[in-house]
Every structure is written in C-alpha cells, then in structure tokens.
Image (cartoon, rainbow, N blue to C red; front, side):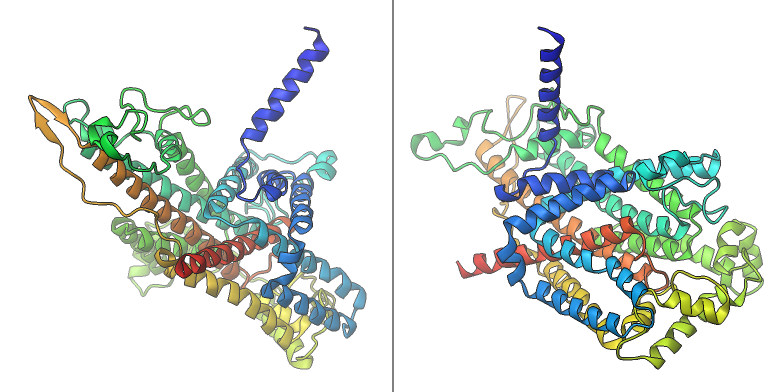
Length: 558
C-alpha cells in the first residue's frame, strides 16, 4: 500500500472515529446541524472564531430544516416584536451609529435562540452540552492558573487566530482573567461551568451508589462483598444502562424465569465489567468531574468576583437541598457564615474570626482591598446615572451603547456599561422595551420551573419497579429469580434515567439563573462567548420544555 492510500485510509478512519463521538439526534434531519453545534460548543472558549463558525452552521442548518416550525412558535414571534421595539428605540437614539452597532449584541442571539430551541429537544442533549461545556472549561482553567501563578502571557501574533491574548497576572492585575478580556467575564463563565459540572458530578456519584446497592441485592454475597460492589465503575454502568432496553416478556413455555438467558439478563459479569474506551481508568468520569468542579471553584476564587462567589455558594446550597446532602448543607452554611461574620459580624467576634479567615475573603467583601476608589468608578454612581437617563427618556431610551459616551462626558471617566443589565436596558431602550424583554425571558424560565415541578407527570418512567424478591439459598449457593430481577432492573433504570434527566434540567435552570443574577450587578452582554453561552442555556431550557410538555400532552391524551 502506497503512502497516498495510507493517508486516505487514516483520514477515513479518523473521520469515522470522530463521527462516532457525536451524539445522535432524535431527528435525522437535524443530525448535521447538531454535529456542528457540538463542535462549536466544545472549542468556543479557546478558539472563538471556529467555535462561532460551528454554532453558525448549526444555526443555519436548523433554520433550513425547521423554518415553518420556528416561525410558528409564539415565543419566537415575541422576539420578532422585540426586534421591532429595539429598531424604534434606535430611530430615537442620541447617537444612532452606536445604537445600530449595539443591535449586534442582541438581534443575532434572538435568531440563535429560535434555532437552538428547535435543535435541542431532549435531556440527553442537555447532558451532552454540559459535558462539552465542562470539558471546554479545562483549558481555560489551566491557562488561568498559569497566568496567575506562572506569569504566562499570550502570543500577540496569534491573537487574530484565537481572538484573545493572555495578560500576565490577569486583568485587572492580581485578578485572574484567563482567555477573557476581564476578570468579571471569566467569573461569569466559570460560574456557568461550575454549576453544570456540579450537576454532572452529583449524577455520576448517584449512579455509582445505586449500582453498588443493586449489585449487593442481586449477586451472591460469597462472590463479592457489598463494599466492593459499591465501587463498580460508572463507565461499566453507563454501558450496562445503554444495553438495557426493555425486552418483551417471554410467553408460553419459554416464559419460565429459569429460561432467561445470560444474554438477556442485563447485569454484566462481575468478573469482567464492561469497559468504556473513553474512560479506561476506573471511576474516571467521576474523577474528571471532581477535578473540574474543584478547578472551576479554585479559579472562581482567584477572579476576586464577589458576585460569582455568592452565586456559586447559592448554587451549591441549591444542589445540596435538591440531592438531600445534609452534611454538605451544614458545611457550606458553616463556612459561609464564618466568612460573613469575619467581614460584617459584631466585635469582638469579627476580630477573632479575622485571625482564622484569610484577609483575601473578608477584605474583598468589605471592599477594604481596594480603598479610596474614584467616585465615578463606584457602581452606585453608575446606577444613579443610568436611572437618571431612564427618567429623562422613559419610553424610548437613549439608544443602545449610548451610556458610555454620555457618562464619559458627564463624569470624565470611560465605562463600557453601568454594571447592571436591567438599568442599562431601561436607560438605552426605554422601560416598555425592557419589560417586554424581561417578560419573554421570564416566561421561558417560568415554563421551565413548571416542568421541573411536574416532571413525573409529563415525563414518566416507562416501567414501575416491583418489590425485589429476596434471593433463595440452596445447598450453599445463591439462586435469584432472574425474571423478577430483569423487570425490576428495567423499572429502576427508567426511574434512574428520569431522575438524572431532571437533575440535569435543574442544573440548566440554576446555571441560567446564576447568569441572570450576575447581570443584575454587572453586564456580560459585550463578550461574544459568555453572551452566546447564556443564550444557549436559555435555548436549551426553552427547547426541552417545549418538547417534553408536548410529549406529556400526547401521553395524557392517549
């Protein structure tokens, strides 16, 4: 075989292997757009240009395949009306050129929402996107730690390719910014990645615990102890679960439980657990997610963003309440309470706690770390100015991106935004347009929360488990009613998938909720990556809600 044929064969095998890594879409017509979207999400944080290209191709492909469906959905018509309102505000803008440029931070993402809310339909897709976003955060974490502690700096010549440059010691100095232009932007990105990683970690941890419990109940105790069974790899469980589609019950004489073959019995051989080629190391998915959660949390600390700290703590508490982790709840409450009292507690308790808690935390919370800042740089000053702009033009606003020149003219201080998305929108687009925008987003989230609360009714498990039969012991050997185990396990698998899907959906609501909270005291609208990821989260919530509620309606009608 000559070199040319070898290269062709290598390219063909590489492409085939790469294609096998893609998640299959439930709608074959959307498979290619979904493939492009997956690639785009994975590389977006590090190579924004190529990532944006992947998302764009996914967007175009979805619009091409689902044009009628997209244009018929009421929420998309709502965003079309919002586009008209923004155009009217642009006509009355103080600086029309800036206002037209400002439309670029909103209108393309309305189109993106319309496409991706049709492309993303199932909890399995949410899980895939979570993995891609978490994996994509790892290079960001590594570069951030290198920037902060090793003095790494980006190669300026490669900035046109990557779209970013690495500033030594961060931006502003002393605060980690990694591949983003400012520490607060990185903080918002890491908050999203942290929440999604934590959701995946809880799911993987729960899988291992349930798998160990089931193995203890259906395997002979003499072959392996329950403690060892509890350590069965999650990758074996994933392969086991994927192969456990419900099988019709045997009938007639062949329906005896003793006649069910080992091939039908959905429990892997304990001596040879099914390997996962993607994670050959035992428990590697859980190990990877543990490192990802820890890495995101560590980098969040070094961004020095008080907003991100608070949101991450709230997210951890929400997950702990959801999963019933009482010990974690107590630990988080104790740690947060100690730090809070060291910053704002009464004397002499405050001084005593400050001997224990590093000044890095309490000095940042009390703003003693950056004293004597100019009045024009204070957020309260910016909020007052934005509200003054709103009062002067409450109906149409001053036009998008008009806050910066007006504030600079008044305060002799350049600022890109007033550190509050809501106040920025009321000042620049007017109160009616802002309320309409908030109503659209709020409606999507409200439907998502309603779906979460009514999940068992709208997305029921296919099989309800029965009581597990106890194993019979004859002549020192354990015998199990395999038919009973077979149907019980299929039922439990259905319940487990349902619970895991609900947890992943909950993590998306938390992630977007955290992003929304972050933007109440900051603005991430001007960063392409964080803005796109935020709209991707909203699209995922809206799309999954629409399709699962539609599926629930069909189920209830039948």
